[in-house]
Length: 129
Image (cartoon, rainbow, N blue to C red; front, side, top):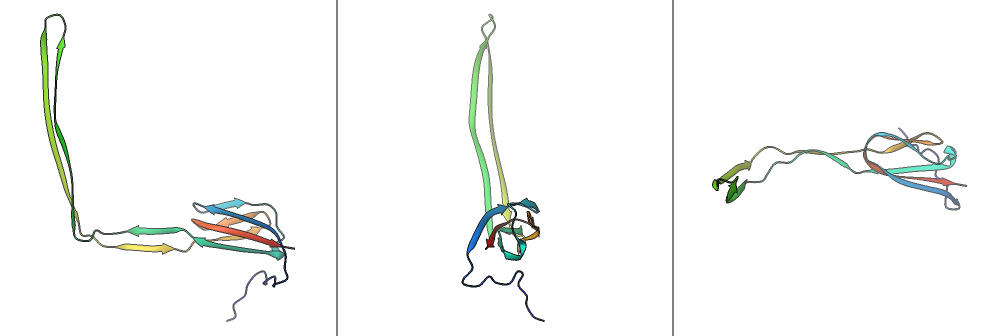
């Protein structure tokens, strides 16, 4: 099976007429300035990954809220209210499995003014004379 490139390479003597670049953050249509599809090259590279990563070894996360108190005088009777509280929270985080994969997203021209992005990627459209 032969590999085909569309459109054919413009060659070394081709002159660039227009360059458009951008970034797609998700799949969808992108409107560009009209190009002659037969004289245009589109390139892109994926900027996305998906999955989960496990922790190596064990890790402990904790929070310690220091003691705090207040005294408030209220009303005309001169009484006071006092409060004192303290809390400590901890969690062990460890193990699990790694499931990380890259996603190969890109763009393609659907017509002279529309690029279709298949996912997060950076793209470039080069039109030649």
